[in-house]
Length: 412
Image 1 (cartoon, rainbow, N blue to C red):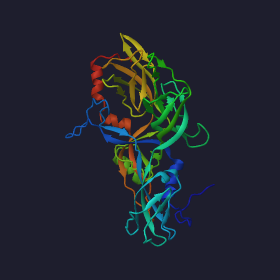
Image 2: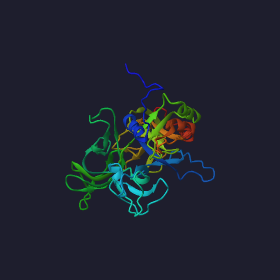
Image 3: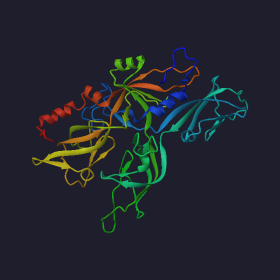
Image 4: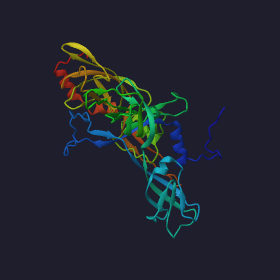
């Protein structure tokens, strides 16, 4: 029977930065992190959003990915050559050196970085054992050189290599898709090049080209190849709602939050950012109106897939087909296709049943202290379910009231 370490045990556990980050890596979950930006609909004086805004759905914030991240490292000088060795990882090798200074605050503006080494390039090299603080700008984006895309039944092509797994056994433990943000080149088997119309998770959408002579569509020839795919992998953070320590539990209670999220120090997760857990989903239903712009915004933030979309045309219920009449774009928008067989008119309501991923909004940052070794430990924030936040803020209340007033059939 195993016994925990007692208060007076001679064994000392090291709680340094490396151990904390190893715990996050081992016990964390795949999360999709998006930073918040105030929507243009927010009024400058009252700071109130437009509840009819088609871009933010009345929340006052829009969300985007983070391409770069500032990283802090503390490294000791082991020799008199003036060379500092950093971690031998791809992110560190590709990172840009922003600043460097020693424990006395002296900066080294002539320092140069090459791969995972930093050359101080100064005649006055400090003594061995001197600690340096190194500030780097690391890319969160990565590049996939080439891959074969697979066509799915939602009007998209999927890049299978961008599905992340925590083990080498496919489908075991947890998998999560990366987010494609750009593709350098897309070609089919006939050598025809295409430009992606939409990106969604590890998927993209292309449309057949038109023959300039006959003005007829040229069918896409399989297989479709992609090159230089720029993408952002999901982050590994720890999200806890039970067995919190006294300080974290108090912070959750004071902020009326639902959980605490821990993450590496270099990830500057801030208030109003959103975190989506990329494991498990639940079903939700909503009624929305066809807007005047190209896309309609769904009330939930992260819609994983759509089960059904139904409406009323000439008094009869119809079901719209995904990939033929509409597609799901971004995280929560429906785009009606130009060549759709049927679609609702502007202002008409339709019902939608969909699977949603649990999404949280950051409501408070929890202050963290450093260890005696001056290491920057992982940080924490209090988070609240995004759907609960939207309900409290009365998002879409007026819109739904207007739908009721119009007497929309409740069966859709």
